[in-house]
Length: 388
Image (cartoon, rainbow, N blue to C red; front, side):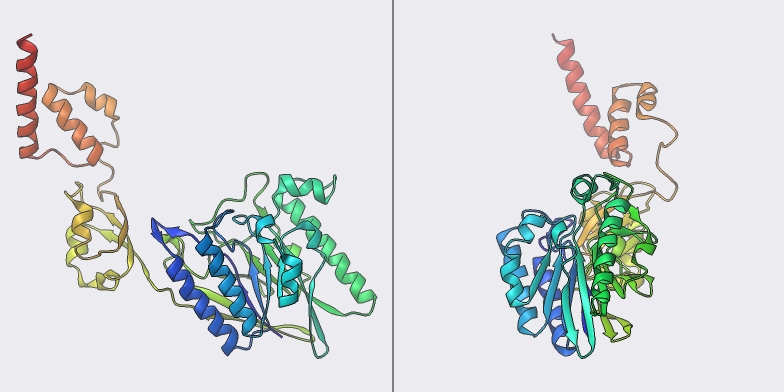
């Protein structure tokens, strides 16, 4: 049996102010092509389908198109909610959607209701664990369940293991496959993920998943293998510049009657590449080594000792899609050993105060022309004060 593991679509997200809906359409087209060409039996979406609890109409329409495309290609969909989703809204109509091959697992009551997929002598039981907010989920799971991520997920896993045991004792030798949206110990984070530590310890023990045929994790945006049977698929698109070097796509998961046979990364190309550049303005504008970034979304850090005038305007003459510009002088922060208040106390006259403030807020000394403007304005102010 073949599964496609994916997660963290974050439909509706923007990237430093740039809408990504077109890029998300493009990755879904590639996902559908993978489903068709690789003869996928079921697509596993491990949470954070939407980027916010109340997605826009065009965003909901995109998910509708994706689910319709997957089922039309002959695959089932098993979808769990993440910390960005509204579980109640995402799970609406779940019992009806089951009839069309879309299985939503967004509530605690569905944790021990696996989707059973049979092929030949193999039966895979897919258990979907939605994102469990510790303070809300612990009371519902039991009075003795600790209100932490490890506590609530541990209880969910315990219930799944009991269900698997009961099925096997009843003569149904299922292979348990688990979906969860969480931060498992050993995972590598990115800048674009929301911290889960509020309300309890963030990471959960990796050995929670040791007895399962495969665990399809969501939440971390970088594809990574934590154990042979425990993987994060990562997000299908980069959502921060910290993900510039990450390979994006999905994971093909193959099983047979004996268990897991293979996990294969599937690459999906992003419509726009990311580039992280660092150097002086002159180096970045002239060095041919940076030609690869001319059509990419760029994060630029300038290392000039003084902040260049019209820096963004100049950098965009070569890199028009620069989205983030920061300034870190190679010689270190200017005036780093002296607070602005102390610097102000050393000012000898009003002109020194004005020029010092300009230098402080933009990290570049006042030019001769700017000093002349300050001098003229101060002379007029002093003359007006004297005439009173």
